[in-house]
Length: 378
Image (cartoon, rainbow, N blue to C red; front, side):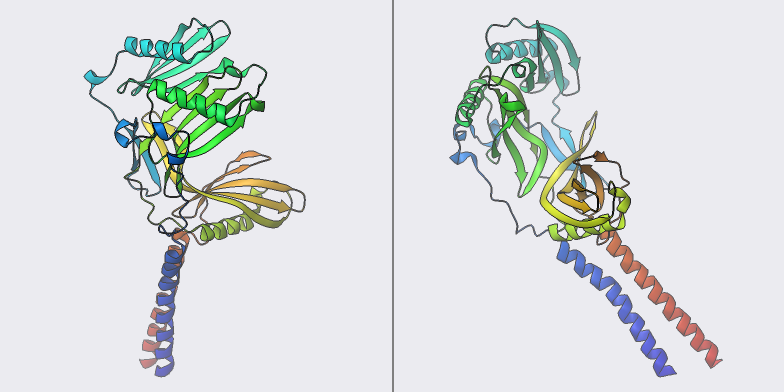
């Protein structure tokens, strides 16, 4: 009997060890390898914008991204706030906006100031002229225009605007307004919108292969007026952003597939037939805007083609890059899908919890065996 009991104790000890070792190995196998899978940086050196690519000293940095205490997946914006005496006055901001409109407007338009709004870091103005409307945002501490939109430029019939012509208009605008592009910005090319009425030229910030959402410079050119119709300049320091512990793409795909198998109610209708992954992108994604800043989350965006016995549905799943938990879904047919943040199989919490459960069960079994052995001896 003693040999049997001893063997059971050894077996339980092995189970306890495996209960902790296997999840630990899995977690390490599934971590995102920071030294691999890096997307090659597309520098500005070989683009038409090499002349306006400058060192960081000339780049307008709006603030930095810092980790939210208590949650390693979340980051928040911390804006560069100067001293109150360093801020420009509203009158000065209006004058800067008027001068900006004079240089960017198509033809001769006499703008009238319709409304003003004051925020912690900026002034916001609305200008009108007959049926036309322009929005301008001025940073209170740098005195620079960070956002501009002139909506009337998009109501006319489209005319042809080539990529090369649009790039030259953007380059002339940047030079004239003395805006510089960060040296590590990635130029994503031109994107046509609204039946060819305008094109957008985007300079996106990346950290390795991870896209930093909302940290970018976007300039739209109207094909009708051949002038700038939209402009935004938002760039953040990323020194405090860490990619340590990010899960590997394949493990995140596996856990997300198991999520859909285990949550059939997420699908619109019908029995699940198959799931095909169509895309995967790592991003620091914007999840919430607050008065004091924006909240971002380390996220894998997974594109899925989900087939049921009734239809096909294209879904974008937002998955926490550290825990692999699905926290948002967007469908091509149903729009945003409300879900409770789900603990997925193979997620960090799931594996650690499984290990703890195995350990507790094994320990309980050992205690029962030892107690029964003592009773037999007595």
